[in-house]
Length: 139
Image 1: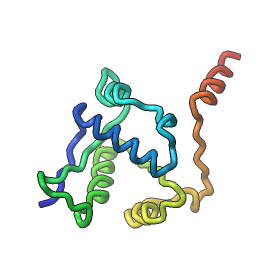
Image 2 (image 1 turned 180 degrees about the vertical axis):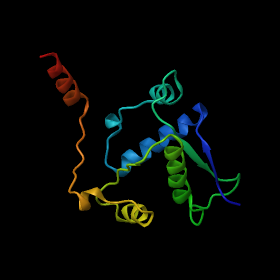
Image 3 (image 1 turned 30 degrees about the vertical axis):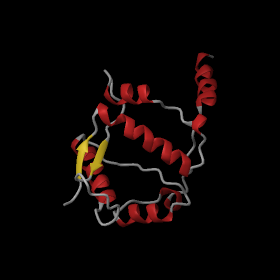
Image 4 (image 1 turned 120 degrees about the horizontal axis):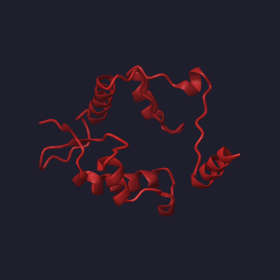
């Protein structure tokens, strides 16, 4: 039996938070570097003004296989379906430069690597830099 893709609920936030922590380890981010906590995740996803949509791939009880379920393919298809239904004409995904299999996965589905195609580089503003930048708007 295959997995089910369903919208997240507030009850899923604990598992999502654990996933965020596991991903941080892969990217060598210290626990102190994680800027979200469970309460913020719940508010940002399920509060009065939700900031994101989230979907969960759920295996049937007792099934633990991580291979052959095409979970990634099904999740990206769901993201595309939701984007199209909301009138979006683009979907952007960030992938670490050293994640060759993930980049290949997206390319096989029609994704274009803008780093290669257009030479784009992604910039990130952490809190202190963001605060400094925001303060410049007062001049």
